[in-house]
Image (tube, rainbow, N blue to C red; front, top):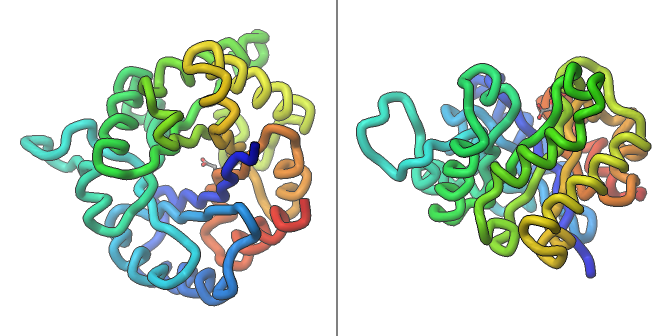
Length: 253
Ligand code: PGA
């Protein structure tokens, strides 16, 4: 059985309108298509999502949001619903990124509600999980990630196409990455945990991305790990050239 693979860029809170030039450059560079079996999306700030979706029209790239509210609409000043993201042309949305868990105190239950909202609106959620450095040092990384993943993923979400991303908090934006063996071990244990909760078939079909300081120089090694089905890329997604190199690295594995 072939799992889907995905390379997704997370621009975080970076990018004014001029940044759309990078999306145009990507669309141009891959006008002949993406490597076989690969899907790719960029998740820009919501302020430029509509422009990004427009720049990607007719290209193999999709647009995504970085977060969504659990509610469809209503009195929630400043929040953006999954329906609104879909209305702007998004097809994906990241939920439960560790920066939102840390900066906004998002719990697994809230992340799960956001993932449900995403699927209700027809978006594919990319559910993020990952341990802190202290949790890894205490030997609890796999247990923490399993617990986050099973509690943040709604029933039926995997069958409906949800994607998960393993992002060790200490590897995000730091230039540090786990060893290839550690990533392989985590992806295997994460898939086992998902299988225990949601069934082995659903877990086997689910793309598990790695995120945290992935860049052109390490992408081929990480993407080649058995059980790693793509990447969630922060800093290295801001430049079309770097993100393009990562996509090309996928094509070599
Ligand atoms: P990074 O971020 O690639 O800049 O480490 C990854 C992420 O947070 O999704």
